[in-house]
Length: 225
Image 1 (cartoon, rainbow, N blue to C red):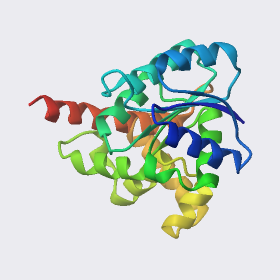
Image 2: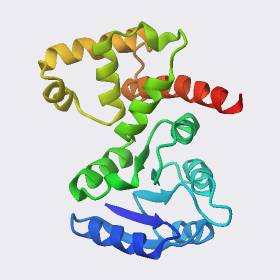
Image 3: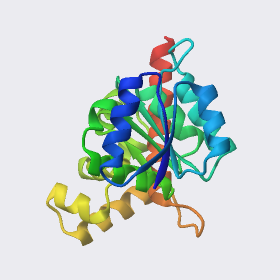
């Protein structure tokens, strides 16, 4: 696993590099801004890029914009966006741009090196990982009648854990359910979201993306009012 880190904080970059090195992740390069990121990506072959959502010069959404562009320019490279604050609309923008191989986590989650490596591996293999606080916030923000409201409370719990990148076995352990029961709930979620089987689609990713797209649209509507 080889990654590039893009963050304007030298202290955070170096600390994250040490943390990743301890679990066998090679940090191929470190960038202070988006311009350096593009230079490093041109020079190094990496599995994933880790970006801060707020970058110079305006410290608004430069990192997020770069992450979205990165998925277009380097579709084989997974993208993990880190943020100091829970910003559901930003997470929704990232997943709307391409639900495969992306992740959005809060910076205070990255102190667990093993969990961070596991998240990077899921992202590099085409999965999606969303911070549980972001997931919870988006669930609470959605009140209007949408497709997601057709889900039962238990199906929502399962979808929330799917958004966190959990496997069926992990979901079963967390919810104290049998694996077969979890599989039945996931099948119900996929059916209610109108996701029919397709050979080339990861329906788990599409389920999370469908839900976050609805949530993100509502977040933007509220923000614009």
